[in-house]
Length: 133
Image 1 (cartoon, rainbow, N blue to C red):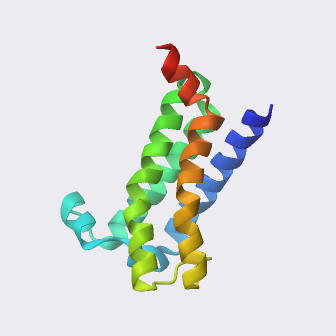
Image 2: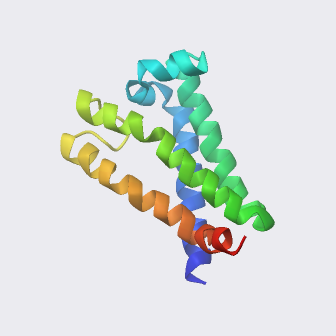
């Protein structure tokens, strides 16, 4: 039951942030490293929108695809790993973003990332499912 609630909370958080990426695109631009635009061939707005779409897709998958829950857990964890360089860039450049307007908040966000990764894996039982295969 706790995993179920944790998974729903994670999905709601991802959905909220995904929508925020569409509504406040400019606020997230400063998080995008230049190499990410070269790698994806998208401009910074495009990367922000794509990451928002990914968050919405992951949120939907966490709720709507119970048979794929472990895979979506791994995908969510991978997403959190993938966006970590942007979080580091945000902290190093002192760039504000929605809800992250101080260096202290940005630094705390860096330490929250491993928690989010573990949350994704634990709430979907991805680690246990993976070890049985």
